[in-house]
Length: 164
Image 1: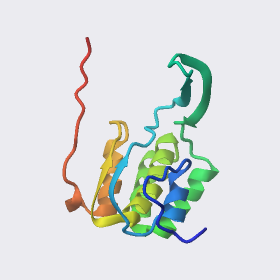
Image 2: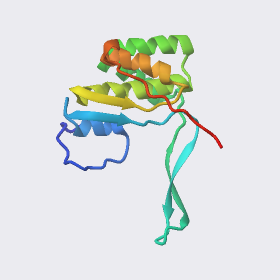
Image 3: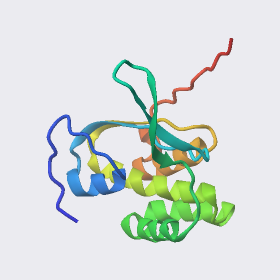
Image 4: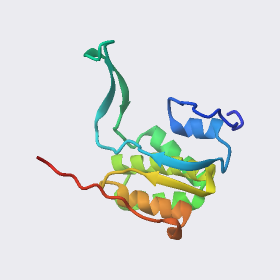
């Protein structure tokens, strides 16, 4: 691991944000975080390309799979979470005890370890916006309350979907 530095403004990072957070960002260096993570909706997302004239191209690459499974990586993240943030580890441990080691808890572990790092890089007067869906939002709210404290929650924004 390299020591965190201060990346240049307008730097785009591609890849796992956990590694980026740890390798490139100093503690309390970010004022605003908007997080739009995978939702655990069991989809594969692709990057689609367009031709020069704007016409849709047949070319595409896989961006990421939104599938989470309790596997060796989830178990390792679970153990690391307990080491890095015992209080958050205990909250997630309660979810695992109640829900079991499954796809949902693998997703929660993946999110929790990243939320701990996001808390580390967020300035004390900074803001974090988390975009998530209703299948896990209530669990993520408990994890956020454990990390930031329940008095730091300000508001919830709900989408109202309309159909023709």
